[in-house]
Length: 71
Image (tube, rainbow, N blue to C red; front, side, top):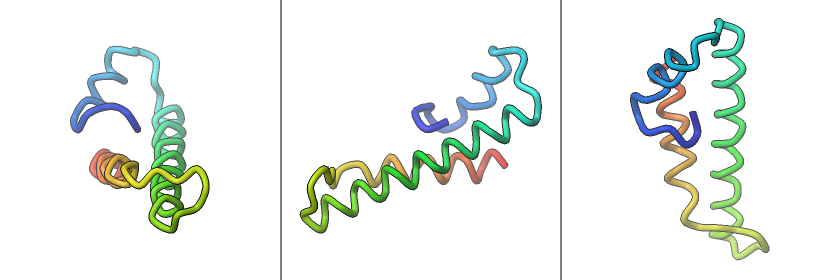
């Protein structure tokens, strides 16, 4: 869900074919963790810390929005 465009997650899981509710829940959880990681990496960039990437924040927040919309 992290890299899928808005509205594509359900189509992806439909095409996948064997995504039960537990798999969907795990996928959403992993997407949230990755989104928070992207936001943290952006924060490090803003603070000038090593490894920070100030352009990663929008992807993190977009992921969170998609996960919440799909719930």
